[in-house]
Amino acid sequence: MPQRTRLDPTDGTEDYPEYGVNPVRTVALCLAMFAGVLDAAPKVIAVDVDSVIHPITAEEIGNAINRAGVENAAAVLLRLNTPGGLLDATRDITSKIVASRVPVIAYVGPSGARAASAGFFILVSSDVAAMASGTNTGASSPVLMGEQMDPVMRNKVENDTAAWLRSMVEKRGRNVELAETTIRKASSFTEVEALRDHLIDLIEPDEAALLNSLDGREITRFDGRKEVLHTAGAAVTNYQPSMRERIIAAVADPNVAFILLVLGALGIYVEFTSPGLIFPGVAGGILALLGLSGLAVLSINWVGAALLALGAAMFILEAKYTSHGVLGVGGAVSVVLGALLLVNGPPEMRIRLSTALSVAIPFALITMFLVSLVVKARASKALLSDGGMMNEIGEARTTLDPSGKVFVHGEYWDAVSPVPLEAGRQVRVVGIEGMKLRVEPASKNSS
Image (cartoon, rainbow, N blue to C red; front, side):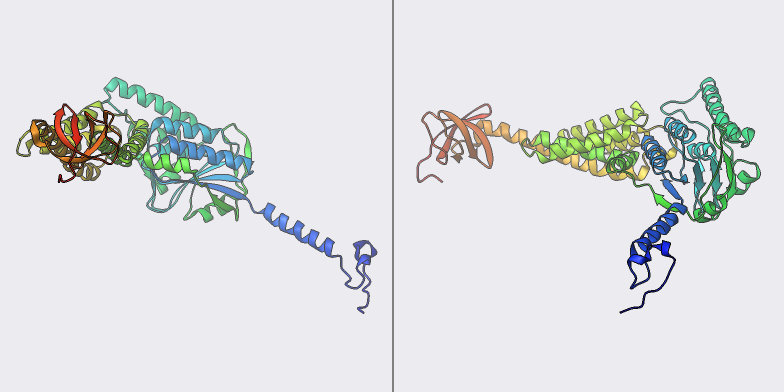
């Protein structure tokens, strides 16, 4: 029997004399210590902004900011590597940043990354603006999508955008005059130039060093409140987009949207030319709608759309009339030009030449092949009406009393019989009236 160890009578060990400790108390202390460690480790929600900025980007950043507020995170980290994007989406993002209850840290990284155009607005509107070595930012001149800007219109757009930028940069205590040159003169800056001229707050090689450097730093929020950051050793949690956000983000790429639209058009065309297949029509409808939804967030140049329609018309004419390939080549060229002109905006938001060529050429060949099949089928039906199917033997697939369905020459036909015929009975074609056959019972020795 173990000897009892005498301890402080207030420690609760008198209930367990043989061990000299209180297991319940020990477990409670361990849990308290573990909870204290968890409380001491701050959380940071990170979002990757590594492509063209569009409405789904704004949705992802907004959801991440909301999540950070709910989970009482120390900060939201925006990893920037973007060529720019849509102005409306950028306005939406900056409004979410300045209204965020949680501090927002924008970091251009890793080395070789950039925060151009719209990315510059996100960088300078954040509570903390940081860059990695070998990065750049700026070049924020607005481009009016869908039309060329005359001097008056350009002046109006630039003034409006510059005023918006000044309102954010001034509140953040950054260099207003220099920031405005990114709009007026499309100026760009390396990370060293941006830090030297007070456009950003610091340069760090990676986000771990960034979070450690920011620990204990006092920042001024957009509403003037002072707040001290606690980010040393923070647990960085990557924001995981929802399935809906992933699908829309993938489709929002104009190259992907164009491919889906073309595939959808082919599927629908196959369904029209061969009714009853069902799958091409269903798949084509879904793909076409996905493609249209992706292009809907962009400004469409109707000259490009008209060229695409003209190309499709040329493919149809090539299959119907002998042009020795002139119409087919013209249609392919028209589709390529239409794809290149379909979306107006920065080069990053347009359909690439490689995409246009890889889609237009197969589309031209497949479309002409399908149309030629339709034309040949119609021509053969005309010959059949002159007697090409007379005396052909088929099978009644439904009861003919007097009309029903028969299977003749590898095809289903509506048919009428002078006498009732049960399903499965062999029939002989004795006449054709439009698209309906006249049949009669076939003799047993017919072949």
